[in-house]
Picture 1 (cartoon, rainbow, N blue to C red):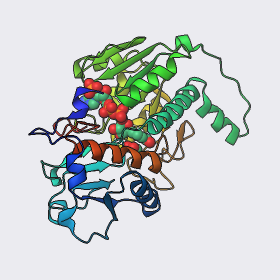
Picture 2: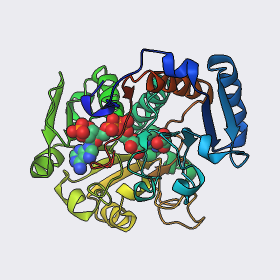
Picture 3: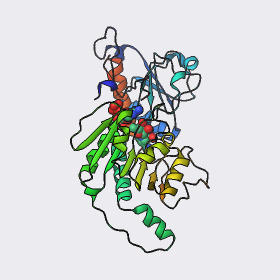
Picture 4: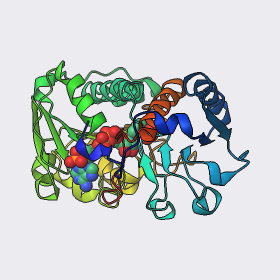
Length: 332
Ligand code: NAP
Ligand code: GLV
């Protein structure tokens, strides 16, 4: 667990379990109601001392200390004045307006082995598809064309991962098997066996210059919004390939369309777009060298996610650190 992912709640700690036993636990859930039914059942069996309320059926908002949500209500402070922890249903928290969440509320993002496994599957598939020219073959099939492309060895295709966090590192581990030379870029310096690492804006150019396939697994923050843009594409080797499985806000879509036209970028796989769903006539939706999936790279499975949140609430009430606490200053 990264130190930055750990919250120390501070102040004198009650003996483990004492707070949990003596005070009611009131939890509100504000997201998809079908998944909510699974959450409710898990809470009944795993944390029976908690009362679990589906939004908007909250009788006494002042009793709610824990909120599970994808997006918080805009008037959060008024409706849940005693909220202590907001659990994001997603791994990313860019959908939350941090300014509207009181500073004393701890924000916890979703870290879940199933979610990581989902991303490993999707991003490994996508890197292999880019490596093996699959966007071209899909397009050829649609045009009833039968044409071969020369095979390239994985050892000759350099893969660069932007974002060496939970998901980026898991992908790097999975890609080692195929023999791609791997490199990665993060905010702080890292040492990862078998991965050439770069960090910070000053090393971005050196990183990009060796990415035949560029993968974005960054969080969306003020620093990373629009990072997949003309200036970035210009620093890639000509004919590089792109996978964006992070957020649509990372990509300047018109810049990608221009880079595809100039040949700077050969083909792309996008799981996320600026606007989801895109308009039916969106230029990237119809582009013959772009494959698009509807933000399905990975997802939080409700059963496991609810179990995880039950354990985190127990830890919080025992004064223990929780995994996945976000750092508001960094924005992730
Ligand atoms: P994470 O563990 O927080 O890792 C983020 C990584 O990005 C870290 O290595 C961090 O560097 C690096 N980073 C952040 N800001 C940077 C900057 N300005 N410059 C360079 N590097 C920077 O996040 P994660 O769990 O791997 O998830 C990444 C993102 O994937 C999520 O935020 C979400 O948007 C997206 N996601 C998408 C899907 C989907 O279905 N498409 C599913 C799940 C998640 P340090 O290590 O130095 O802090
Ligand atoms: C999905 O996109 C997530 O952030 O979990």
